[in-house]
Every structure is written in structure tokens, then in C-alpha cells.
Amino acid sequence: MRLTAKHWQSIALLLVAIGVAAVLRLVGIGWGLPTVGNYHQSFHPDEAHKLRVITSLDLSQLQLNPHWFVKGTLQFYILGAAFKVADLAGLVELRSSWAYADNPDQLARLYLIGRVLTVTMSLATVVLTFVLGSLLYNRWVGLAAALLMSVLPVEAVNAHYMKTDVPMAFWLSVGGILAIMIWRHGSWRWYLATGLVIGLATATKYSSLAFWGVPLIAHLFRLTGSPNPTLLLRHLLSPRLLLLYGSALLGFLAGCPYCLLAFDEFKAGIMEPFEPNTRNDLFLDGMERGPILAHYLTNIMYYSLGLPLHVLALAGMAFALWRRRKAEVFLLAWLVPYLVSANALGYGFARYLVPLGPPMMLLVAALFNSIVKAPGLVSIRPVKAIALASLGAALLYSALYSFAYVSFMAKEDVRDEASRWIRDNIPSNSRIGLARPYFYTPTIDEKRYLLLKLDMDAQALRNEEPDYFLITNYEYRQYLRMPDTFPAEAAFMAYLVGGREYKEIQTFERSPSLMGIKLPNAFPPHDWMYPYPTIRIFKRTDSS
Image 1 (cartoon, rainbow, N blue to C red):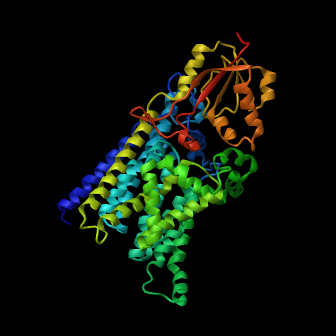
Image 2: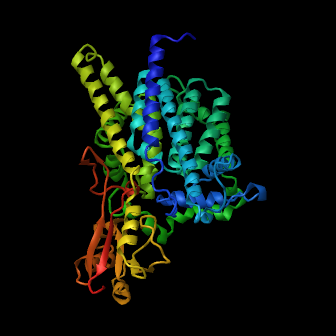
Image 3: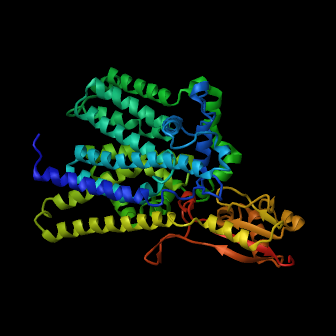
């Protein structure tokens, strides 16, 4: 096929989208990693846990059971393979994640390899979004959606992490393209390929199950006219659907084989997030919010997308619900079941919007396409100009929003700054109290200081009388939001902050800003503030 000027224009714009996306995903890629003289695990809690799981696998000993099934296991194997290749190439020394205390730069390299893999899958998703838009609408919708995906804040930020959300979005985008092939062509091979891919997506993250209805919708789109119930039932009983979902199960088993080989462990992993003692920690951000779906559509989308894309995404979804053409129904079948499942589970994390990036940005692009090409409006030049200017403004704002966040990640982390201040200002052998130390806590030398883990227990603080007490907003902000539900924690903060025994002597508090203007930071989602916890250090008033 001969490439025309329009084809070259499309290629150029797609390359721009990929280039912008690469910059936004690679700036700050080394955030929160250990350095020589400063050993710690990643400041992203899930990354540290994933690395421990992956480094416990050993192909030579046929030890491939991750022994952790809260999420799917396919990405463990993909990352494990990447680590092994890097090890054979001499790029890293592969060993247990606990064995890098004397060589933290090797540990940092492992995290970087995993993060670069995430970046690669994110860049591929930008291209796949273009393909989806071109198939569902036209290449201009595909290009607009790809550009929007390249600057989408929640995608750009989460592409910095060795996590499963971006890989899940990648697999679902591939599955979406293959499902369109079912709709357009109906060949057996497309049913087989789609099933395998959505199975792999589910083996990456179980919430991909919400996508399994999309190829069914594509299958039903092949019905023409107004089918009678008999014809519809026959279509639903098609052997092609049996092939589709049978291959989906095979794809899932290929990526998560130990769901059968270690079924009891798999079952326990599935149930772990629903255990009462776990829910208190994981679900705080979703507690007392009312319907969590409303929380997603308001607060979480506001932080994850930025104000312009937040408004446009809601407008795009509303327009799709009103128009309900096949392309919109296809994308809504991707969006709605996932949002409903998140509502049922009670999660409140920004990263759970990552797999919805492609369909949301496609609906935004389709909305603008409909405005520009609407009968009666197409001849009114100001309408087209305003629409294109609005889209350009949203792209620019989102690019700046994302860049402000990721460039903030490229700076010294607040935990490292606090660790250095503690070394320089708190005398050796001091007794330092901690509430619930975790990834948000600065690295403190336990050979130099006596650390007391006191929880948020006012009586324990009175009894132990540590010289200093350190706490972060991760530990108290949700409890102060719900003082009636958590009266003990609220009373602890009142005692610590308002009492006479301790005085706050140092606060480390930062947040991303754009040209000196702070980005929204009133009450961001739990995982949105991973790079910038507020750290407060108190000193006992009678300690020397």
C-alpha cells in the first residue's frame, strides 16, 4: 500500500504521542530506590513485595510457586524472565531481595528493569489505543485518544512502578482489538486469540474478569436486523463462544498454573483482601464515602486525570450513554462492569483507573469527533475551532500536570531528606517512637537508635516516654477523617499534638507543583501520595 500524505501525518502524530509518553514515563523512573550508603527497599510497598516473590522463584530447582495469589502471577513470571536475562547478560546479580544490604545499587537495578518493562508496556498501550480508535471510529479519533493516553496522569505516574495495573491495561487493549476482529470478521481464530489474551489479562490481575463480557458484546454485534429470541439463543450457544471462553481459561492457567497446582494457597490468596483484619488497612480510603463508585467518579478521577480530563471523561461517558451506538456500547462494556466491580469491592485507589485509560480517552476523542462532524455544526467554523482548542488545552494541561508530578519524583525523596536530618540532628542512642512503620517511614539506623513501635496507643507513649516520636500522615489522616469510627487513634493524635509532653520540632512536607503553583492536594487517594508523605518529628519536652 502506498503511503499518502495523510498516512505520513498520522505516523508523525503517533510518534509525537510515543515521544511525549516516553518522556513522561522515564523522568523520575529512579524514584524511591536505594543508593550506595542508603539501603532500603522501594518506597512503593507493592514493588518491594513483588520483588521478594520473584526472587524466591528458581527455575533450576523447579520452584515456580510464588506462594502469593492476592494478584495474578503472570507478571511475576514475565519479570522473573527479564531478571534472568539481565543476570545472564551481566547487568545485575540475581539473588534474594534480602541479600543486597551491602550492595543496594544491584537492588536498584532490579527495580529499574521491572519499571522499564512497565514503561514499555505503557508505550505499547498508547499505540494500541490508536489502533482501537482507528478500528472503532477513524484514525483521527485514534490519534487524539493516543495523544490523550500519552499525557494521562494516572497512566504516566503508574508506569513508573513495577506493578500489574499498566500490564493489565496492555493486555486488555490487545483483547479489545481482537474482540473488534470478532465483531468485524467472526473467524474462529479471532475467538481463540481473544480468549487466550483475556485469560492472560486475568492471570495478570483478577479484576480483568470484568472485561470478559466485551467479546460477548462483539459476538452479539454480528447479529443483523432484529433477531428473534430463538436466533439470539442460538447465537449465544454458538461453539465459537465455547472456544472463546475455553481458551480464556487456558490463557489464565498458562499465566497462573498454580491456581490448580496449589489450590489451597490460591484460594487463601483470593480471600485475603476480604479478611476483617486486612480490610481495616486496605479499605480505609473507601470507608464512609457512601457509594464508592461516586468516590471514583469524583475525588479519585479528579486527582488521577486532572480537572480538564476529569470533566471531559465524564462528558464522554455521558455522551456514550446517550448515543449508545455500537462503538460506544463496546467501550461502555469495558468501563461499566469494571467500575461496578470496584464499587462492590470497596477499593479506593487511583491505580485502579489505569485499565480504564484507553476506553475513557477513546470516548473523549469520540466526543470531540462528534462535535466537529455534527450536522449543522460542521459549517460553523467557530464550533470546530473551539472544540479543537479545548482538546489542545486539555492535552497541554494534562502534559504539564503529569510532568509536574514525575519531575517531582526525580528529586530527592522526602523520606531520604528526613533520614539525613535524623542522622544529623538526633543524638545517637536516642529512643525514637514510631506508630506503624511501613514504606512511608524514613530509613532509620537501628544500630544507632533504639526504635520503639508503639502503634497509635497514647498509654504506650506515656509508659515508654521515647525521646522522639515520628509519625506520617499515612498513619493518621484517615483516622482524623473518621474520629467517631476510630476514637482511640483520634485521641492519640490529640494527645501527641495538643499535649504538653511532646513538641513538634520538624516537619517534612512537600507536594508536586507546576511553576510554583501547588497541584491539588486536599485529600488525595492513598496511592497517589506515595512519593510525598508528610513526616512529622516530635521531641519530648523534658528530654535533653
